[in-house]
Image 1 (tube, rainbow, N blue to C red):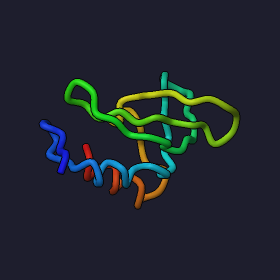
Image 2: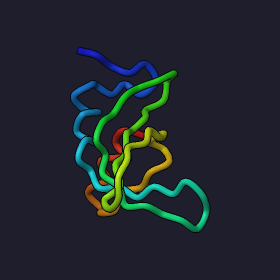
Image 3: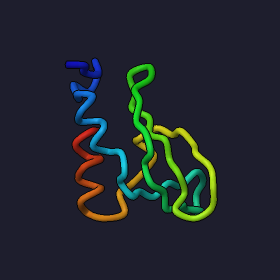
Image 4: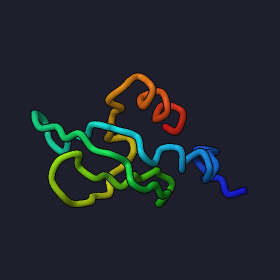
Amino acid sequence: MLKTKQHGITAAGLSQLVGLSVMWSPHDGIKFNCKITDVRTAFGRIDVELQPMEGEGLHWVSAARVRGITDDSQKMLAKVL
């Protein structure tokens, strides 16, 4: 089973993040509600691909830069980070 070196998380564990509703803030004062559409590991960090709830587009960001909108989604992120 594939595991990330630094986090000890399995690929199956990472895939549980897909579909979570999260909030991403690229800069202070502006926030976007997004849905996680994909997850990857790169250079020892976990990245998530985000799609905005309204509007269009996809963007990869570090999972450490997003917050869960609900308590459940925040708990799921905390398991990974």
